Length: 474
Image (tube, rainbow, N blue to C red):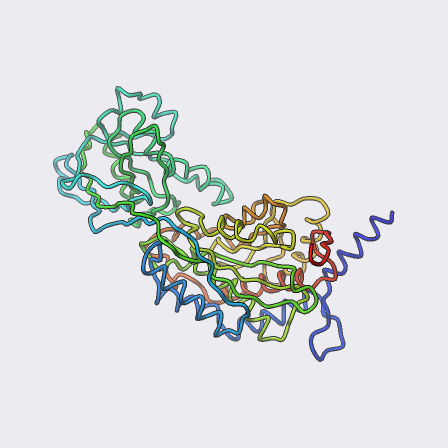
């Protein structure tokens, strides 16, 4: 009974906040959310910063000059917004270069000879010989179907994985998770049977001619072959030729390559806590994007969510008890070096990391948050999230916190992911059209408000949300 009373008291404490400066009342989470959302919607600072980032540093793949500009932009923005302890923390990142040549041309059927199909090389792919390579295309819908063809049906050919994201699956991220294995492992599996290249249907339910890039993996024991993504419309076209019994031959030309790793950086700024400054509530997104578009939803939006959430709290005079630390990670897209490096560099202080929140699902209207934690801690988070219903962010979903903060979760840090509406995310994900004009400013700002309210409530609670007590200096 005593434990239950203590738990209910803690939940209640998370649902109310310390008085605002100069205000004798004690506002609820709902009151705070209204105050913060009015400010974010009035200022539209998240959208302004997103547009600026995408203008200064589009196509900011790790290891590129654009990524360097993004790091410099982030540090300057943090200083200009008045965050404290602003710094860069060095990270070694991979360097993959797309190159200037990227073509997939139809050789057969004869009536379509010379037709160029829309592709993007997959991140990490090797290139082709200078004159390209030509071969017949064989279509499969799954890895088991590839195995059925066997070496006899695959050797010397180009494998086309026509594996759509299943539109009937309610959660687009679940559909993506089911289909993306073919992008990630398709080249290696095809090469194991003697294929000379791999083509993957783009990861989207939308039917158009905008191909979607993304990462792929090789295996040391299997010869490396080129891997590309083909637009969904072009995939349907090629598949229809094959279904009609036509022989399909294409020529693939790629000049992509991998170079030596280079140094980049995570960028960090803080709103230092008033009572427990050594305890950290982390909020972040990833600065890097793929090299084909501005990277607005993925993950300029998340980076600006984190940045402006902290800046809005400062502007409103909301100094929390614990330190809110903004971390803009580098190299999420093709290596996760930023998340791993942060974990390693801060290993000695992980017991003081109370909570970590990542935004990496786009800038759409807020729906809530996700976490893998259970029991009392989950209930404490849910007690706060429920109060965000007016912002549309009132649901707590089961799921992970995010790729960059996942190493922290393995060490016991409470991790949470921001969940915006997922319906349109994969229309733009990893494409040339992932641009600010496809971000709604009001939706973006409401996301900032929801994140700011949650992190402030956690950072300002009388006790840690994880229930731990860490001795000073320990």
